[in-house]
Image (spheres, rainbow, N blue to C red):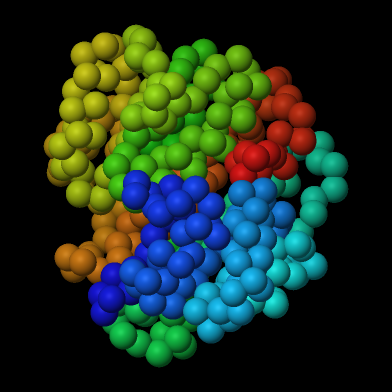
Length: 325
């Protein structure tokens, strides 16, 4: 980010120390005041909770309250993480979907989403809007304005996507016995991984698997498998190479791109274009819109399977990304 604002992920190569308490003094020396920013709908996610407890303990021992803060976005203000953040920083209450009673049909989830979609997509909009406001050196109120703009446009993107040939093609492929792969680099990788986790719960229930390209456990594709790729430019060289290899092995490709005239789009069997005008260096809304565009995929797959007589247990739709998140 501009103006010396540094964002570091816990999993980044070169992150100092194995524990937050070890990293804290090093990060303070390198960058100045440190904020541990946590995004957890439940407020009980194991890894963030351990990190928050470690940093809180370090702050308590050193008395360095002005040098470190623990800030949280959550749906549960009574959660363990919320109690820690209230003491050592700030808590933002972001509502997720309300509890849904035992459902007989998957369609009840169409409006509210599954697997904490409401919270995760909402927090994605929030953080992106904040990033844009920081880029513009604007007042905090500008982030609220940007968030409203993004939500309105995202709704239009979803409506367009649901009636597209892309969704018909992907849903039809996913309900067949085949493997599904997701791929992307950078921010596109995060979109791919987020969608893959949700789709995998459904595919596993019918005996198939979902993989994310580039991960160590990813097997070689077979004829008839599906690759869903995300790329803003549609020209990402490595992703383009994946597509060429996938086609050569007899697989089919569905592409979510910002440019339908791109190299990746030309190799795809089906394309969903999300055109976004973006200046170089500015946070790109394409990735937020891609998250929203792909978010209905699991529930539409469930509906399609149910229409064919295959009923999935409702608890699958309640699953979070990971029980160890």
